[in-house]
Image 1 (cartoon, rainbow, N blue to C red):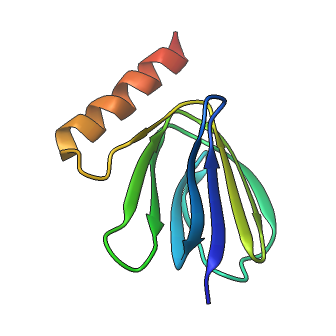
Image 2 (tube, rainbow, N blue to C red; image 1 turned 135 degrees about the vertical axis):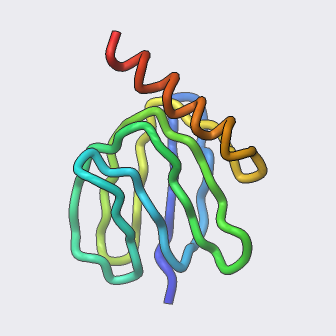
Image 3 (cartoon, one colour; image 1 turned 60 degrees about the horizontal axis):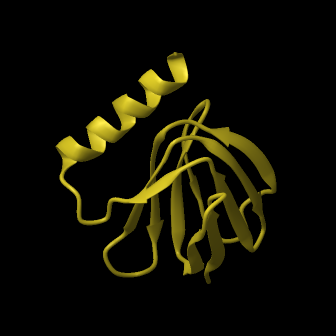
Length: 105
């Protein structure tokens, strides 16, 4: 069983496809989304969205935005995003800290 995921920015569709699970940096804490998840809407904070499709997870840095989950669909509307699947942990941390500083100013 899979859930359809779309990760969208104002500039582009970053990802569209089916996944086994998704990890989202929610404003109240990280949360996981599985197929048949209860419907919900949440704001998201700067962090890494991990989309698990069966192989190596696809990791996308998001600078904030919103996520809507229904039983068979997860739509992530991100202010900005960068694919960081093959990026070092230090670079991921820097992206997050830079986004938080930008939000604070």
